[in-house]
Amino acid sequence: MAKFQYTALTEAGERVSGMLEAETEAAVLRSLEDRSLYPVSVAGSGGATKDGQGRSRHRVRARDIGVMYGQLADLIGSGVPMLRALDSLIRSTVNPKLSVVLKEVRASVADGKTFTDALRGFPEVFPPLHTAMVQAGERAAFLDEVLRSLSGFIERLDELRGKVIGAMIYPALLTALGLAVMIGALLFFVPKFEPLLASAKKPLPTELLFGASKLVRSYWYVFPFVFGGAGAFLWTSLRTESNRLLIEKWRLRLPIVGTALKMLAITRFCRILGTMLANGVPLLQALKISKDATGSPLLAAQIAEAAESVRDGKTLSAPLSAGGLFPDQIIAMIAVAEESNKLEKVLLQIADTVERRTNRQVDDAVRLVEPLILCMVAVGIGFLALGLLLPIFTLASSLGKS
Figure (tube, rainbow, N blue to C red):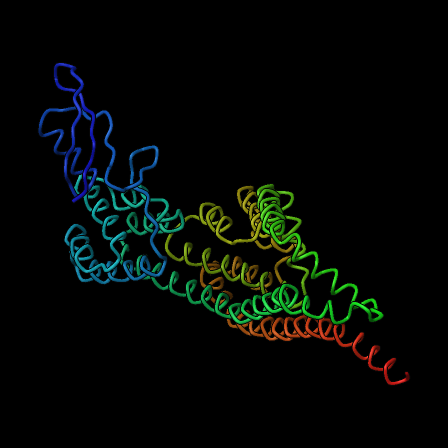
């Protein structure tokens, strides 16, 4: 039970306030109505954070949302009423945050709201992509199929995201290890050679190495501010649309990696758009939602132009082809699908095919990144060894001649 601080008006117009314990905000409102009180504001206390409308803000993993959709689809498909199905989910959900959200969704449905409107009260948990598909399923009376489709869709996206993140863990560890070795050497290892080589003739690599060591030891406290300022500048720059597009263009031009990133965005677009069209969402609305879910500003801008073309009664394939991001093979398949009125089916087929191809490209990109990082680490260690050994060899050679 959560505690809620309320302010309400009596029938005589007197303002009163107090504290109530209830499971949800909706339960507090019903309790106040039973007391003939007119609520002015209701806010949670005891650790729950609220947004401007008094609604608790929750963050739930996409994987848990997908499992919940699958369970709800099975219950509704078996003929279980919505309220009883939500009660069952509340009892069986292992995620406490999701359980709280489902309790409030259940209270809203019990108050007469549609399931779609209840989900829209939690945009941080149920994004517009989900609510649009659920609304189409409610209107066309195939909600269980929509929820099952959503569950599979979320699962596939989660697998793809996990594959990409997992593939980058090893290169990230190699980079961190290489930086740690170089910084440790400059701080603790190189200074021990400075008095030994004070009288020796120092070649350029040695001078550079000793200079870098002195810089790191003397101004180590400056580096966190430099990196922090650079990060803040980069973050601020990314907030502008022009800089985001510029960085996106640079990323997509990278060999292998850029192609993989582009195909990931195309896969996400085709799967989202195909899934929404297959579940009864209108094309313009589906294009608007899928545009914002691609993760690529360039692709989103191209899809926005395509949406305007569709709004004017034109085809979808022509503006997508003009942007140059979609491969010709995919454009040809979309064009044929539009002519045969099988766009949703073809889009899902494209997503499956491109996803398999992208997985191979991600693997190739990782295989390329790993040796590059190893080469960079080897160059750094080689420079360190060269800078220390060259004056020793020079000194030994001069002693041998004398």
